[in-house]
Length: 422
Ligand code: AMP
Ligand code: GLY
Image: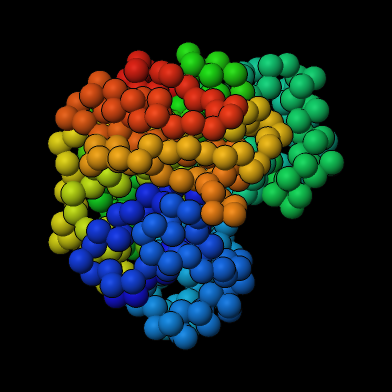
């Protein structure tokens, strides 16, 4: 098969790495890709927000399957347009992707189908939102309603700060149209995990649970980031826990989407907080997590391409989805000053001899005059695999110690607490 993968981050390098191993894959294109995906196939310079251009490329190059990494093209209806051109694509259609692209849709959906989540109210008027927060007497979170690349969630410390946040989202339009509506949501407490599942419109199969580390510095300090590392599986999440999350969260979501007439096909990602009252959904995402994928796919024993095809043909119930009895840890190596303004174009030195227990996934890298250089905030995702978590941690950090670029920063405690906190 000729496969086109959409995206260019660490998640997409992990997807490309896994797709490449499939006996079904004859040729892999990645658009636009990065130097890591270029090692797994051929990068193509396509505008992934231009659906007709992507469809035309697929028809010209006889692409058999499109795999979509990021949420933005999904919210932009790439799967709808590919389907209209008769091209098989793995991912939700635009209406189904609303589970991520519209928090008001997602929250109302959870309420309608009794999926446990934080109490909330939706506002399209800043004045009403401000009146609401001065009335309620519990801690709350403010979220922009639309897509914000993970930047639209605030945990204000005071009412004054909360009012400023509302103004900046709704009046100053910090996130543009994505701030037309906001959610004011009850603040929950507890450890967080990410549970992703394959879905074929009718049913879903869980992946292994992952814990992401969102704060910049060790010991959950510093600002929130796109994610500084992750590990899987999560020791405090038993098979029984996963089964109950499937029964109470993922399967009701798949059934609910079907009932609404927008069957959910693709990856369904639930960001969960394990509260005293049980797991509650913080958010749904309509795609693989980043950096969760960089630990999940190295542990997937089955063929990702076959699973995607089984989902597309509605045969997930009989698909083989098996996991290795190992652990994986990914450490994000970031540019100096990330998540603030960063310098690009700094030369990166990578170790020459990788082995099967370590994988260096590229995220924000580029080739410049034949040299590998930094090209983003999060530069590399270094995954270690081992028979248990301590061994995986060791391997990951040993590899990190052989990587160098000026100003590189990373957390030294990824997976180390295996902790009840991130
Ligand atoms: P989200 O993008 O909605 O997952 O939110 C980003 C981060 O904000 C989450 O990983 C949590 O750490 C935090 N968060 C979101 N919603 C809540 C909530 N209702 N209560 C407490 N923390 C939250
Ligand atoms: N790791 C969080 C996300 O992919 O949204």
